[in-house]
Image (cartoon, rainbow, N blue to C red; front, top):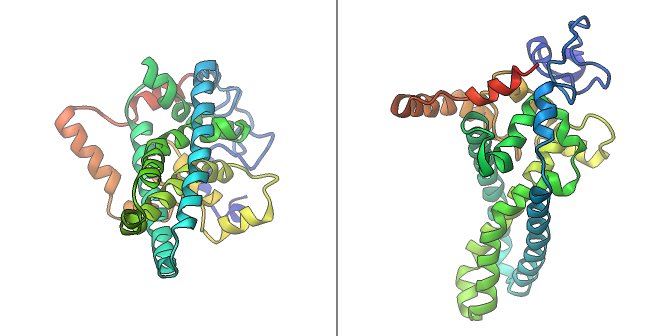
Length: 280
C-alpha cells in the first residue's frame, strides 16, 4: 500500500487509512477501539456540537460572499484594460502563495492552541479537533459546512472592494485596479482552500480534472496532506496548495514560533488537540 500511495510505511502506520473504506488500522486488525474515524468517542462528541446557529452563520456567509464575488468580478471586467493582463497573472501567483501561507497560519493556530470551550471554540476550533480524529468527516460535509468559515473570512475585504467600485470614480478605480485584482484573487483562493482540503481527503469518486490538478501539485495533493495527519499533527499546515510546506519545514518555522510562544507564555502547543484524541 505504501508503494501505491507513494507514502512511507511510517506515515501509513500513524495516520487514518482513508484509502481503505473498511479499515481503521490496516497494520493491526485486532485493535478494537477505533483510533480514528466517525466511531471514535471524541469524534462523535465533537460532531454532535454542530448547531443550527452555526449552520445559519455559514449559510449567510456563503450566500453573501458569492454575491460579492460575482459583483466584484463584473466590476473588474468592466474596468479592465489590456495592460492589466500581466497584472492578472502576477496577482494570481502572488494570491495563491499568500493564501497558502495564511491557510498555514490559521490551520497551525487553530490546531495548536485554544479549546472547544465558549462560542469561539465551539464555532471555529471544534472542526479542527474533529478533523484530526476523524479526517474523513470533511468528505461528508456539504458545500456550506465545508466552506462557510472560509467564505466568512473574505466577506469584509470583498465588501470593502464592492464599496470602492460603487463609490470611487473611474480614475480612482484605475489607480487601485492592480491592488484590487490581487485582493480579489486572494479572496478566491482563500474561499476555495477548504474545498481543496476536502478533495485531499477524498480517495474515491473525484473527477479526473481534480486528480490531475492534485497530481501536478497545482492544488493540495492527497499524499502530500496525509503527512500532516500523523500525530501530533505538527507539520505541513499549509492547505491551499501546500507549496510552502516543505520550505517552512526546512527552516523549522512552526517549531521556532511555538518555542517562542512557550518561552514567553508557558503555553505548550496541541494540548487540547491531544486531549480529544485520547477520548477512546
